[in-house]
Amino acid sequence: MNAAFYLASQSPRRHELLAQAGLRFAPLSVSVDETPRAREAGLDYVRRVVDEKLAAALAAAPTELPVLVADTEVIFDGKALGKPRDAAHAEKMLEQLSGETHSVVTRVVVGLGTRRDHVETTTHITFAPLTFAQIQRYCASGEPMGKAGAYAIQGEAAGFVLSLSGSLTGVIGLPVAETLELLSRFDVRPGGA
Image (tube, rainbow, N blue to C red; front, top):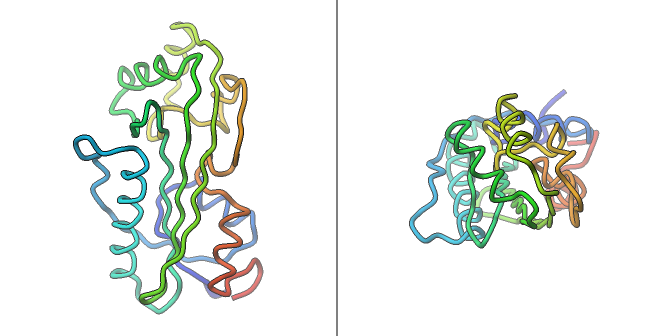
């Protein structure tokens, strides 16, 4: 089976979601600096990182196929939380989110040659109040590491969520319905080229 597009993402969750949707893609490895800039607003951060990923991916793509890139970020109080550096940092992030509402923004961009198109979802999530013991136990599991906002909603952290308004798959890493519609603009559909 030939790939219909390149996926420039190391996220196993994005790979799984696209495969489950019946899409044929080839992985493409790119690396960009994802360090937030001083005073950079959360949405500006997500948009900049995705633009930089797309530029790197288009330059690295060995053949002329659409390239898909995405970034998911937890935004609290207007700032991107990023991924935790260590367990102590994860604990601090979860203490901030405990009993509060935050946003998860996922931006997906597809590029081909000079053509670009995107979708962006914002999901609002309210966490239950968490005890410090709950936070410590969760962080000790290792699950928060490598995850925006220090949690994986499809894992143990599902029990932290009081309410969710938006795209569950967007929180996991890729808003599937919106991404399928975006890819269709590039003539990429499940089961087809």
